[in-house]
Image (tube, rainbow, N blue to C red; front, top):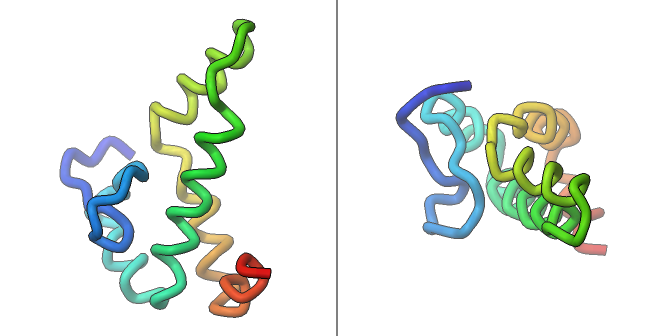
Length: 90
């Protein structure tokens, strides 16, 4: 998705990657749990793709930081519904 206009999940200016503006209404309509879970997913992606010592680590970090790979997690969170937020807190 190369949409120049973006919005931040939750709109709180967090460190997560912005979502394309065309996706923001879906995030907002999906429920209050979605922005929180998207932030958690983004933080976890960045943790596991932290650059290390080898080329694979650097490639993983570059791939995650490039963005554009958030549609599947968004769809999974929307389809799972609010109960997934409860499971994430456990």
